[in-house]
Amino acid sequence: MKEAVLALVALALLTVSRPDAPVERPVPFRVGETLTYDVSWSTWLTAGKVVATVRDKRPSYSSTAYYIVAEGRPTPLVGKLYSLYYKMDTLLDASTLLSQRGSLYSEEGRRHRFRTTLFDQSARKATFEYRSSTTVRADLAVAPGVQDALAALYVLRTLPMHAGDRLTVPVSDDGTNYRVQLDVNAPERLTVPFGTVSAWRLKPTIVDERGTALGHNLTIWLGNDPRRLPVKVLGDLPVGSFVLSLRDAR
Image (cartoon, rainbow, N blue to C red; front, side, top):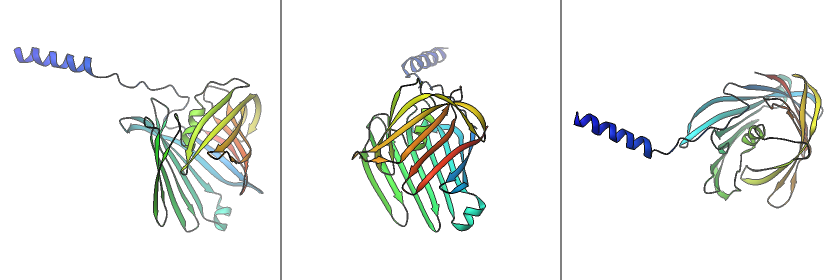
């Protein structure tokens, strides 16, 4: 009897002294969500497709994280001309909605490359690793609330928006820090292969640490409904113009 009482007291003390478990933030996406996009590139009407999936939610770095993957492949015709494959993924902390780790694997012809950024959010530091024929690592200081590129897009879906707002998201990608500023314009009707939707029109400005702007005429349309789906992305890059249009959402 005495042992049982002591055991109950010890259990009570452990329960009281244990810190509260982190509270997960509400998000407009779920495990299993799969978004499919048509990709147009320069003069190619349909050059490929991108599939973004919330694969699972798992224990990760002493917390819980969404594992999100986006894969890009060319159409069979384009693939015959040039072999391409891209896989971007992120571990997005379910409690803080901050990136724990982001990576990009690419195959361009015979060239295979793998880039990984591991974030220490509390220390405001990141470790970037580039693997190709050799491996290069670098440590860098990052801004509070920094995201990798894929995490930034999903976190954007969680933010409240009003016409005239200006949102700022720090992003670290490929060993470089960027400041992404988004001007929010009123929702407009937009037709994509998925259907006709009402979507916020966001105008991003991306600037690196030296103040150099990246990309031109960038626009993101984000659905004005509870799911807040990214329905269209377009822009001009030094290698050509591109358009991503939502075809299917499950």
